Image (cartoon, rainbow, N blue to C red; front, side, top):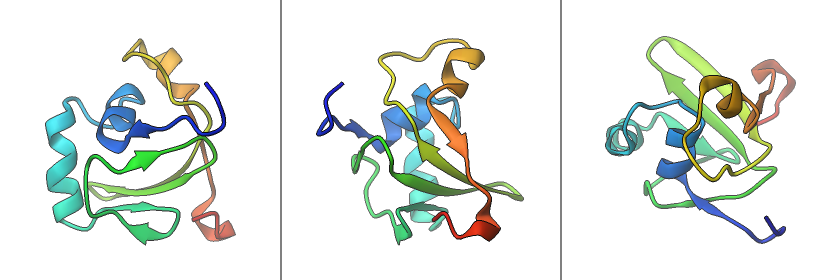
Length: 94
């Protein structure tokens, strides 16, 4: 994909297997549990690009991940894991 390529946040989270269904993203956003590059996300259709940093509060777990690839489908877990890299939240990555 090109440098300007982007994907909807809900679709990317589904591809990367952070949610089971895309519809689960809207309640996370409403609960203020998703940040993109340090800013609270307001819409599930917000665009995500390679290099963006997502901060997710999923249950009791805080995850900070850098988008490495956008993905073209929801594949197996091993394929999904290649779409992001975890960032140490203490290192100030997001």
